[in-house]
Length: 106
Image (cartoon, rainbow, N blue to C red; front, side, top):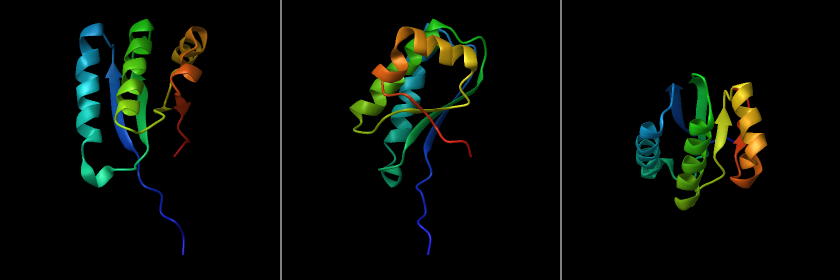
């Protein structure tokens, strides 16, 4: 008998992210986290579709990470992180500070 892993709660982020998008992303994540049947599931953010990631995306990830931690979950895992975004996260020290980790490949 194998142990079944709980599928992650995944927020998919695509396109070019603006500051105006950040509250909506946090609200979408709050809705995903509120599903009682998903209690205890890991939380990840799929960033493969993000276009031209910059500091606004870094800000969004910081707020999403805070949303996950406030819900008693954590850390927020990232999937499909563009290399330039990974570099920005490392430069601002957010990767370690916010507990952001890379999700394992499927």
